[in-house]
Image 1 (spheres, rainbow, N blue to C red):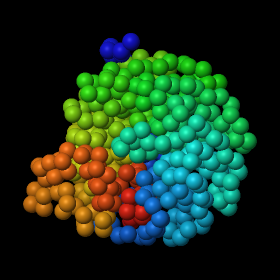
Image 2: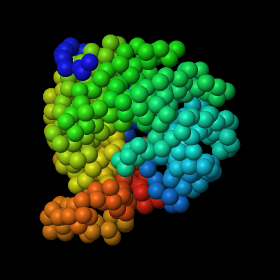
Image 3: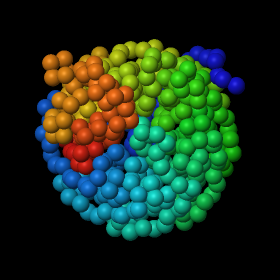
Image 4: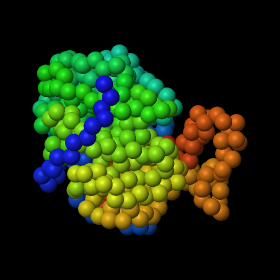
Length: 412
């Protein structure tokens, strides 16, 4: 039955639960860090070239930076110098990000395996075969990124399952079947495992793999299933997630009862993140970032972007950072939403004339006609601009991210 009723319950001051480092910095996926901010005109500290598009997001653990590439490799770089420490070859594109414990990293490859790799040596510890991994459509850029909690690795799969794997042995502990691909990274909070599916449901599971509750997205005229593509974030008793039905949802973590919903006209809502009591959300076709009062869902501001965003907004106390398909990285004032372009890839500077009017800085109004309404081809060509699909990672005043130009960048 469709969920239509919303209950506003006052909550205590938001508290974000933390765990091992991974996409979004923690198992709660908050993506907030009290780091020094990046200047408006940063320098490139280093850049590292892979042999494929970099769609996955960097994760830093100690002196290591881990990031995957469509060249089928997972790379371990020195985060200070950008030099390669090792690379691990799989047989498929690596479009997911790693989860880390004290000695290993865990990630999914399009070859259909979840890998555990020693973080210091790059040697494989074990691999676990899923039922197969692939994109479901041209805008499904990422595979599920793993989460690790209390010695268990949780990951979603294109085969429709959420898996729980013993981190030490690689043995299956349980799997839970959904009705669609699970490319959302599982979020773990208060021993509840949370993940949405392309079947339009959002699932909350107990540590033994049993269903605690599930929530059916409302749906939308053109996207009636309301697929959940990206990960959720959690603070205190609230879980927040976005869906392809143009909605942002806030639910009770314990019960799945609705707190509030926001409808973004004409656009998928994409990835949520948290900055204190502020919920930040990226969007696709409306070309903007949104800020909400996380408790009650009041919209605070809208920050314009030139093209679609499919990544999370990394934040500090004062600013948010995100990239978009046009190959530009933006910095937003969290009080006002006012933004500046921090960085533009060389590919963007070279290729943007194909898509954007140089006078208005907007997409050519006849762009679809130029592509004879082949929007799949158009979106594939957008990646020629060195798109930044990667979620930035901020650490000690340095911002790290990947690009479809094949590079990993460090700005300061």
